[in-house]
Length: 489
Ligand SMILES: [Zn+2]
Image 1: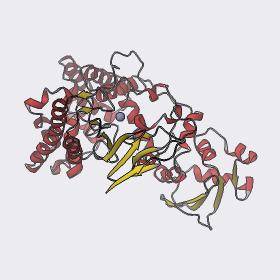
Image 2: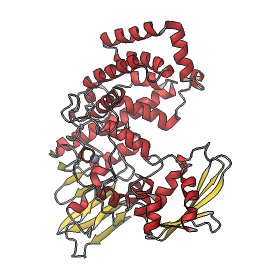
Image 3: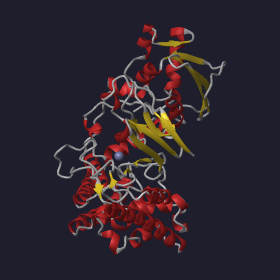
Image 4: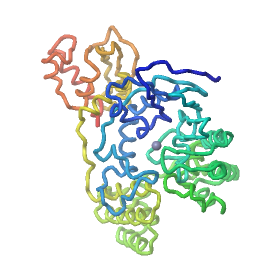
């Protein structure tokens, strides 16, 4: 379906266009438009993908993203060179203000808009994300592909952990751009390309590389190959491996192969030997019984000296399976990781190795205080996300034999939810349960400050920022209920 829309609202002459939901593409809007009164165009699913940032996986994705972007690495660290498709992710380095203006003009397949006489066409193009779109300026023959192409091998899998990125859809979206035969290609990251032939050449090589990795992985899978075997065998052909747009400065062929295997067949590699593995402790003890600690660690040392760092990592892990705090094993592991990092051109991998090495050497991640700007940003997320995420933080032992309900009334947004803890399960209900044993009323912002420890419960109750049915006498049962959940990081 094609919609023509002529802009009429004079109040916001400069609309914004979000090509997808990633932070580097949606945050900071209020730096340009403080009151947020502006048209923001995006795919109809973008807003729900933005909301997913506050979800049940936020703690682990935050940790892994921080390693991948090198947020804890010291600027000037030998290994912290750049982010591959840009200098560094500045938001994680204490720069900028993470404000957000939500999309308010959305579409499903294509949308045509005219802004100040410039014809703009938005085309849904799932690839790096499901909500991705590209912008086409027909009069200027310009395509702005968002993050579906940049000067680096595509990040078909990101090691911070995301939903499966479908390579077939990604290649098809690049084909939609090829069909337009544009004169200019202006990606969100890395330099623009001029000239029909140049643009067509790059788009074709990029989509061919994606299809090649996908097809050859499936070909090997059909022959019964395992993930490890496929990583060894699927290599880009000669005409692509040298291509400047396919160097592994952001994505990696190896990670892509594993992701495609998992996307189609799941985690089981097909060999029953791995169907139910020996425990880590069993493997560690078994190897130590066989070799002894001294021999195991000197073999790891020798492997590092021979530059077989990956093998060294496998060896030291046997020791760490048994003794996770073994000083020498940790030091060897950090050394091997640093060696790999310094020989890795891929910044995501390099930063991850360096960050983990730093952690092994005893540096603990810096804990950031919840500042005003972040609190304002968090308040734009649905209240239900915060309550629902609690279901996966339930301590099974503390909640065994408990049958209790907490009813939430978020007064500023007039939304009610219930969390029912029932024998090691926390059921989330998108409605008020009138029979709930504990009932609270609070604003979304105050709740966020309470659970992140920025505000105290007793003080908030006294000030009227939090109300608990039954007043102060009911406070211990509220605190008791919340103590069944892991604390919010
Ligand atoms: Zn981006």
